[in-house]
Amino acid sequence: MRTFLRNLSEIKNYPSAIAGLVVIVALLVVAAYALIALPYQEAIRLWRAGEGVWEDYPRLARPSWVNLFSAIKLPDTKVLNSATQPETKTVKPFGEGRDILINFTFDYPYDGFPQDLIVYFQVKFESKQPHIDMRWITPDGREIVVGQFSPRRSDSFRITQDERLRRRVGDIPVQEGLFARPEVTPLTPLKGKYTFQVNAITFEPDSDVDAKFVIYGQVYGLAGTDHRRRDLMVALLWGTPIALAFGLLAALGTTLTTMFIAAFGVWFGGIVDSIIQRITEVRLILPLLPILIMVGTFYSRSIWLMLGVVIVLSIFGSAIKTYRAIFLQVKESPYIEAARAYGAGSGRIITQYLVPRIIPLLIPQLVVLIPSYVFLEASLAVLGLGDPVLPTWGKIIDDAQSNGALYNSYYYWVLQPAALLMLTGLGFSMVGFALDRIFNPRLRGL
View 1 (cartoon, helix red, strand yellow):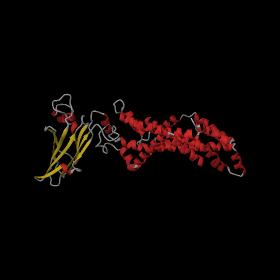
View 2 (cartoon, rainbow, N blue to C red):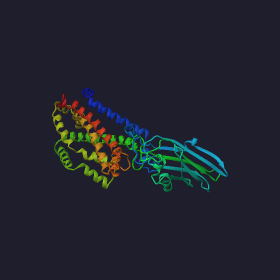
View 3 (cartoon, rainbow, N blue to C red):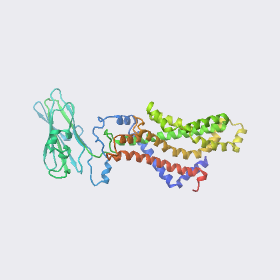
View 4 (cartoon, rainbow, N blue to C red):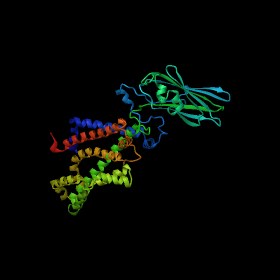
């Protein structure tokens, strides 16, 4: 044990291993943060939810940090709500009802036009619907009539889809007509303070109107959004603990089980060893990925079922041959003969004399195996066989591929999960290769 710890302490002499450890620790911190800040059930609810949950998010918006690397400042999303911003709302008596004025004033310093403009209404009335008049006031003082209508108790007005408003602003896209500089070609946004005014007349004493005005920008958050308006940060965060758990459990399950089976076969020899070797040889000609595809297609795509199948199929892999060769040498060692002489049982010899000799060689392989299983899970998701419930890195790439992200220049949708996958592989590989040099006598000094 002391020799093992002394050898392990040599990792500080390998700068690549230190860098790899920093990456692994960072991934573990992100995984812990995801588990604490976004509980499992909440993450699943958000990821599976429709646009009702994500209605305040823009569709296919790039991450906000792209503005740091571009001379053109793309608009961010703004949400203005009279229910949470009471200072925007003024109420006066009007006959038997009320005169409600809502002024949403906001600054627009961007070089691009927004994606969409939608007003959501929450209205309280008994039988008589309120009448609403909406106006748009530009920084240069122009006033544009947006529209008039009588909302239901829960209603919305999609400003950019109103054909009358489109004709009113000159038969151009509504968002460009409302934000563009007048009589300037090509169309460029007019920067400054805008006011969106909602004037509601109610006809009952206790009636009320609240409005939520959403300006959907072209950028949003740290990770952007997808075709269903979902914040990709949910999947990027939760993909970290899922990827690490899948890779670690698969690597531990296959490596430890394979090692004990190899030790069992070598110690008992004869027909036991022959059966293990024949099973291994049959397994080696069976392709893993096609079998997983069959399981996902005909049975279930649960990530935990896939994990179990991966472990079962990988137990009798080529590593059994490697471990067997090592155990055959260890079996002939003098201390094994001594253990036999004082009456140690087969279980004791296998667990306390054979297996410990191979653990130093096992650790580097275990570390290197983790990213390979992470990539396997992502590959299944990209093939459309990922878990339909869990948000994972592979699922993001699959959604991006299905919706033509690269063809439509939504590179962030693919590059972010791909970068995390590569970073995970790089971190574990650097640590694994350093450990291999430390524990493998043949590689020391190279």
